[in-house]
Image (cartoon, rainbow, N blue to C red):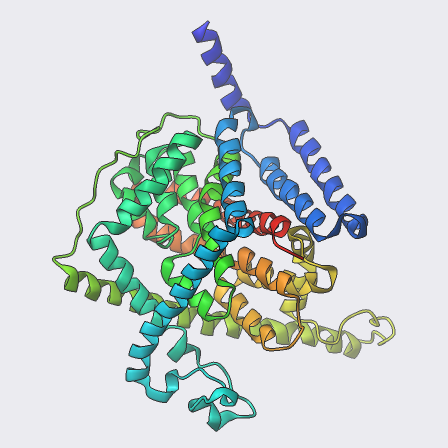
Length: 479
């Protein structure tokens, strides 16, 4: 009997997901999305979010490598954990108060780095506008701009050094193992992948795998994929501070980081189910990595150096990508005049916008995703443009756009800003594929081929995970 069951399982492994299943699921979720759109007045914003949860989950299922071998125990418990965490934070007043207090602590934490930045940069690090006593901004009362390099980047140095210190003393590892133990027991996943996913709550997409570095070369493809998806769906502790410094809702940023833990893991297992036996299945008793630092001073110095590399990389990436956006905007804006100069009448291009830009194109493409998150109709193209900017460029660019909008009264509703923070909080952008290939590939050079094959798929699932987090939040937060 056992051999018959084994043979059937092996047959399912080779067959993959039947095309009929894919078509049926695709038609079903499309029907749900269209129904939500046409019935939006009746179902309201929360009804849109419910449709979004079903749609985003179903979208991953459509492209699943093999739905026949999915461990539904893992999926059900993962989704349940995600919902429980969301309900606790967004609906239980006591927990919400605690998370809000943590957000206040994070803001206070930023103040410590501000002290160091102001000592080094002086008034250049004073981000206050002139209306509330800003010293530097008084020189630019009519066209004052946020001094990103002197205000937003220094916290990365401090937080990187702080988390490196926690790692040196083993505090970070203990927090990670506690979270991983809960998920392993409930979801039935392997210890190595769960530890890495849990570490992503605090660490970045190339730092978190260091927790399980000895196991990375021997991970199954499903484990490796879960590790990559989690990196895309999360952010690091340093970036969490930076996004809150940009003006993002602290509760939204903190909540989505924790929700992404079970979400990224079960979506990864839905897309690429486990068909082998992981080395650390069902246990978190993995090898303890000894701190590579001599003492606390060495850890702080090393963390600062790593933070400097990260801060310079963030600044350089923004300069280059924003320059490319400006170039594409100029090219798109020039299409209509060129067509007119070639003989087409202005009347024939009446519906062609004069201000065509990358932001507008992104808004059109990602407006449906924003709608299914639970965003109201007046804001869906605006939020859609931020989602597109995050995917094509990075989340920094999207957050800085949102920061500018928040300075304009009633540009978007508070609900839209909150849900957008849920969706933007993640490293799911095209450049992250290269970052993971370089970072994780350095730990396991023999797995570079697998990493390259899985990169685009991990980006897709990681991006969907952030949208799913936002849709669940859309069900729970007030309109």
